[in-house]
Amino acid sequence: MGNAIAMIELSSIAAGINTADVMAKAANVELIHASSVCPGKYIAIVHGGVGAARAAMKEGMAAAAEYVVDSLLIPNIDPQICPAIMMTTRPDPIGAVGVLEYFSVAAAIMAADVAVKAANVTLIEIRIGFAIGGKGFVTLTGDVGSVRAAVAAASLEEELFVNSTVIPRPSPQLVQKLI
Image (spheres, rainbow, N blue to C red):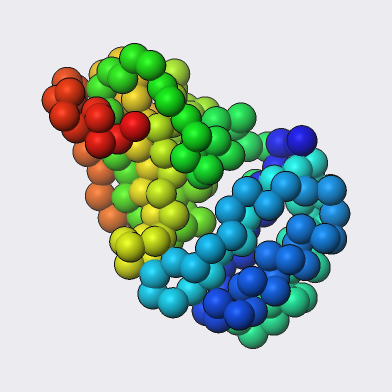
């Protein structure tokens, strides 16, 4: 479909639902995520070509008006980002596990893109704000050195970084919970 992603985070759920509809209709994009998130906000994310994502973002921002909390446009995302947001990845095998935690959803998505471009890792998931206080976190896997490099690179990229960890040999029980 393309290699760009656009996201708008809103302080109103009603305005968020309308904004998601406006973004989906504005250009040839796929609405990959649209839902309420804690604490009472709404996130709309579209994926498509750069021009289409930019057009959807412009129309969405106009519709969202004073309810915009945050926004994001990444013109050249890694192909792993959208499946990780949609929670459709099934990496096999699971090696070392890295976790990156951020105070914002936009920061988590940007960090995931940085991480996968910095080292040979596979995204497990980009968790978006629901039941985690509006935060975002990224889980990824690969060999220990690659996971450490990806986590280090993504940790430096954003001021809204909270914490990270690298688990060299995760327990099988944890792996089952992650996938």
